[in-house]
Amino acid sequence: MRYRLIFALGLIVACTACSAPQGQAAISPASTATPAVVSAAPAPAAAAADSPIADGPLYFGDLLQRRDFAAAFAALSGADQLPEWPRQGGTSTPAQHVELNGRQLWLVTACKPHDCPSERILVLYDESTHVMSGVFARRKPGVADDVDSNDAANDDLTWLGAPDQAAKGLLLGKLYSSE
Image (cartoon, rainbow, N blue to C red):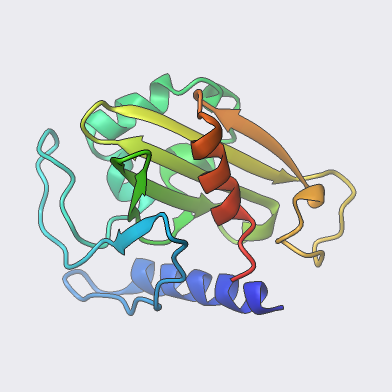
């Protein structure tokens, strides 16, 4: 139940961010980070297409506008099997910095607009090497809409790229966090 509340708050924040007037910051919820999360992205700063990813509330759609991120996403094995909405950014929460195996990565999460429980994507991106991996979760056919989104038995998972066991653990932990 607690997860549903946090998930709902995340959706509200994502919707608020999308509808906030240009130049006006959206309200951001307190981080429910696991120990792997170093920080949520702080105040915005403009980023050129090939400069390092700026700190600031960046969303999946924002990052897809960057050549480096878009190229890594397009080259991601399994991405060609995804529905159209991930290539457009979907509904997302702000990207977060995470540390995994001593490397700083971006964790980007998004879901199908107007139907988040049915399809979700989480992507890890290494800005220095342009390596990306992730997971796409789709509600299994015949599973009721109101089932627990925190139960992995309700989803079919598609691994994207070649995440190692540590990356899979981080992605699954974020996807099915009870906090």
